[in-house]
Amino acid sequence: MKGVSAVFFAYIGFDAISTTAEECKNPQRDLPKAMIYSLLICTVVYVLLALVLTGMVHYSTLNVGDPLAMVFDARGMKFIGGIVAISAIIATASVLLVFQLGQPRIWMSMSRDGLLPKIFSRIHPKYGTPSFSTILTGFVVAIPALFLNLNEVLSLTSIGTLFAFVMVCGGILVLQQRKDRPESKFKVPYINAQFIYPAMVIVAVILIVINVPSHFQKDIFTKDTWPMAAFWLIAILLAVFAFTRKLSLLPILGMISCFYLMAQETHKVWMRFLIWLVIGLAIYFLYSYSHSKLAKKKE
Image 1 (tube, rainbow, N blue to C red):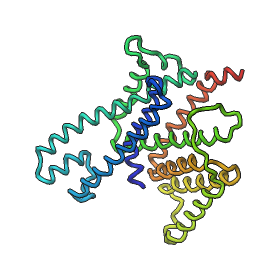
Image 2 (image 1 turned 90 degrees about the vertical axis):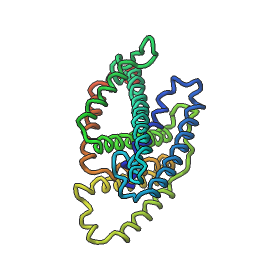
Image 3 (image 1 turned 120 degrees about the horizontal axis):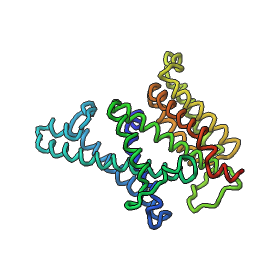
Image 4 (image 1 turned 30 degrees about the vertical axis):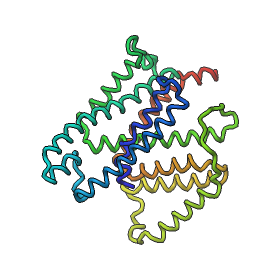
């Protein structure tokens, strides 16, 4: 699971598709299909590729920046390794462009809602894209990438994306509890988690208490283990809410799985993430809250 959290950034492009809704002819039909189909295809390719690589060399040798090229070099096929390395540069550039596609459109939508200044929603007269947001995203991403360690960048990317998924699942839980929620064609199936999820948590806690040695139990609260301790606190609180409020099972499972992957990150990554979160909250309460269209409607 720690490995999964480390490479979670590989799945960021799928949620970026959802930000292109305005550029689709039929987004309610096309976007869900696009995300699910691409997710299935890429997952199958990832698994097959992992099987091939671990069949060619020992898995412990793959912790390098260019594992595909390294595998062919290790087998004496340096020419093929060179072709793969060049292809990887082109593929990486295309992936980075996809990563850059989503953020400007998110800022554009936030600007339209009044959460950011109007300049973020400025549309280029020729290309029809959010020009200012796109350029600013390029600078915000490129400049820190010049000075930060690759592993730190990937860890921050993963934990930020996971937290976004947690917020989406939490938003679904809130909407399902509201009686005045607006009707939408996008609906998550409701499965009562009142007894299922609390039972899962109880079984998990019992298994951990039984299987974890006593000398590990003494060191459960340290600077390296507090993210996991926070995860279990959240898991138990969700179990209480699921039992008392009959929450939906699917959003809870989504939240708890993403929280678990976040808990695999080190305390340093968590501290950096929390600093960025505080900065974002400061922007929200100092500007976005009072300038949002929703706040103006309430007035």
